[in-house]
Length: 186
Image (cartoon, rainbow, N blue to C red; front, side):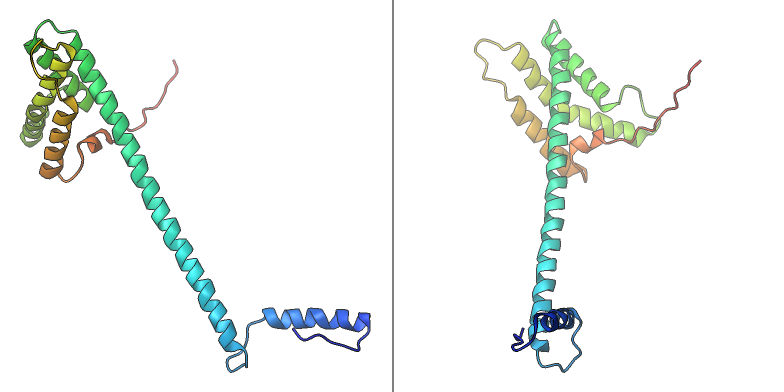
């Protein structure tokens, strides 16, 4: 901004707002300083793009972390129910049966499905969960000379199988929509 010399204070106060307004107004093409404004405009657009990219990446990361947390709690609650069911059994066979029943209950598979393909899928999944149930049973009633049970390894193997077999993680099965039921007061 050019300094105005030889003006009275009142005159300079009237010129400064006019110069400031001229600088904030859009510059017509062909103006002498348009390359400077174009550079500023490009810098502003670049900053906006960087900010948008950051916000998008942050939102995606937050969503991934949220899903990871949800799966961790689903895994904990599922395995807690299976472990509690197996702990009260008298024999290993009874413990495996109780653990499998707890798995069916946690998955909401308490009853038989009308569709044979759904029942087949459920039976396949439950049969692949039996090694997990065995490891859980071994962890609640360890044998003296048997190797230490690997419940986490068995679960990881099952999860890997499920992801390879079906297009989603196992824990997504717990994302079933439950419609609200109306409350009625009598």
